[in-house]
Length: 129
Image (cartoon, rainbow, N blue to C red):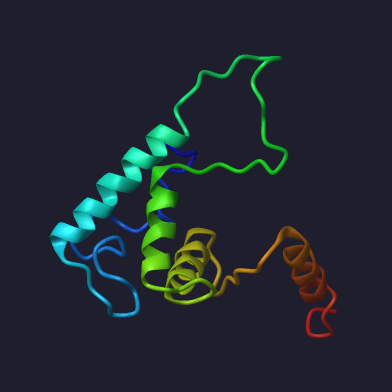
């Protein structure tokens, strides 16, 4: 489970969600979609078993990454749909994120450095000075 499992940024879990119908229009059969979900869940559990946090002993990733089975499933589905760069999944995330934070627009970038550059550029834009 991830830190934002109930977050509105995740697509709803229903038959019409991104997990069942690929965003580009390619559709998986219900049976195949279910098998993929099951295999990804099993692979995640095997490769990343839950471990209790022990202060002073447990490693904390320097990247601060937090991911879970939902993220691995979404990445697998995006790969099967062959959206390996910005595409329909990114557009859906940008739209949901913008609504969540009360903004008209949000833009996904490739890194924190790019995000900082974009923020600085927008804050120092002549349109805002």
